[in-house]
Image (cartoon, rainbow, N blue to C red; front, side):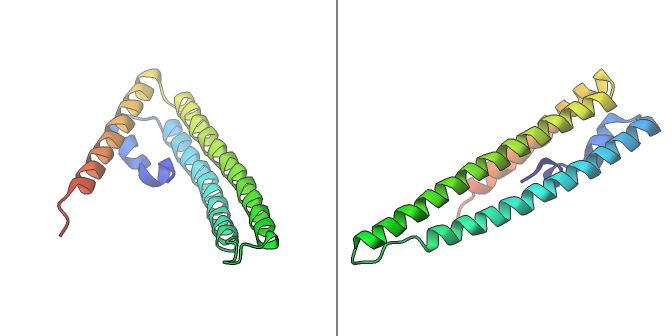
Length: 141
């Protein structure tokens, strides 16, 4: 899941007040452009996941294990491996977007505000991890 879908920018803005109007506009524009890039990556990932699932579902060799079925299976596995390479590309793009967003935030904010923003983000994700751990450790009925 992408950062802006998890971390609401309004939470961050509240931690950084007072912000100038120029900073607010910069943060808003950054949020909009990041959201568009994240949406494009998400759509590409969904399409890739569907395509990979179809490739794997259609790739099982028949019970006879004939050489034709094995060759077909190997071809489909090669296609699936190629799609995993595409997945790696998506992950690199997402990491690039994360880095660019942080760099742009640093350009918009003062050094002190940037430090407070990173602390707020760290605190938010620490709480999210703790909540996730509690959820996973809950008694099941």
